View 1 (cartoon, rainbow, N blue to C red):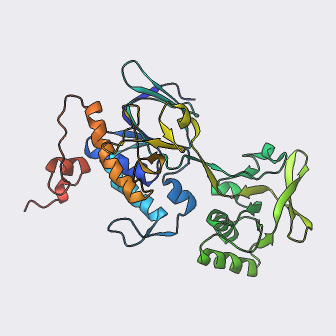
View 2: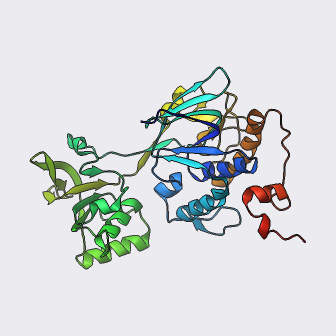
View 3: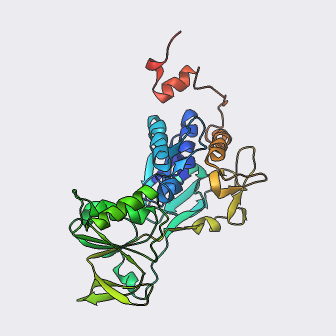
Length: 353
């Protein structure tokens, strides 16, 4: 557990596309940010729910994917050197006598920040759990809802539960010959109908046909245990017959459920699980705390990534007087401003013509 308090101008809660673009807009105003996200990687909902599905409404990008958009944003904000604190959830927030905010995470990281930007999308994502009595005692030893280190599953007998992109991708990755190949892979889904990219489903079925993995329709209804360890997943098929699938590890991908979590206890005005903001600077009812992206609501709100990007601009300019109370903040253009060229590290590549 960390004990040192990190003093900073800005903390951004959420590392999805809007949170990442908030880093960029703050960076243009020479405001450095720390970014906290409950997921173990940047990208938020785009990476977690549809990493490879096409997105068509990002300006100047006829088509992209969640994965590509995240990679582009990370490249764009690299000159500003944000510090990421991933796999952590902000658990408490208290306003201090000097106007700053003390934030702590569930991992013990503490911040003392002048401003806060909540870009948490629809909330912190929590995996939907496999509801089998007693199974939770194997959490993080043999039962996993995320794959953080694929090498930990190499050479293992795996049962993977789910019918979406995450489950299909994991089954393919561990079934194919390669450095992380599992000893065996069995994919379990309630029916032979998947919510994943057709090309990925076809690849999975081809691996089944080649006996590199197997698929079983049904649901995990109980489990086997031997010497205190999970030994099998008992799967009941559509005909009511239960099959014991021996395993070393059980991977479950049943989707994610967004939770507003501790944010609901911070004294912020909330309407239908969203934070109400003004449309001048996207400030909440607490000065110094801003909300951008899907987490906020206001008249005419549209839950689009590009709208979140717009909100980031105004939020950054709204925060600047708090961070630099004696400084005049002027709008500058990245096309012509030599100061911004220097901040972005591109002054040498800009023509003097």
